[in-house]
Amino acid sequence: MHEPAAFTETVAKLEYDTGRRLSGPYRLACLRAFEQNERGFRACVDAALRRGRENKVGLLVRMVRDGDWNVAPPPPAPAPAPAPAPVNQSGCTHEACAGLAECRYE
Image 1 (cartoon, rainbow, N blue to C red):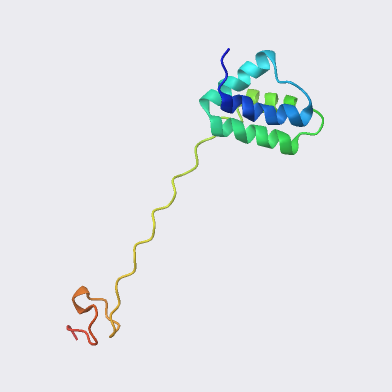
Image 2: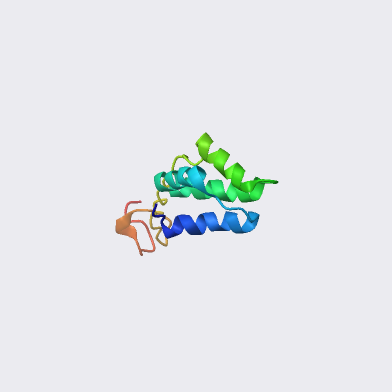
């Protein structure tokens, strides 16, 4: 079984913190979750590190079994607000009046 380095590094944080290895069919299940949704799996590892008390590795395995890693991607960032219309010295917003002291249309 070939594991991506990113998976090994992610799981190593948990293994180091707990002093326990993630192995056997549980490691394979975690690897599959990682391959399908890396961001979601990393979120599960972080949650297990934060929330776990006695068995953080067991908590991660349970989260993977429950499908907690399969989260939707974040929504796209909102479009930037349009630039405000240029205002000239007279306070009007006509493009033709930009830079003039008075509005041409008043």
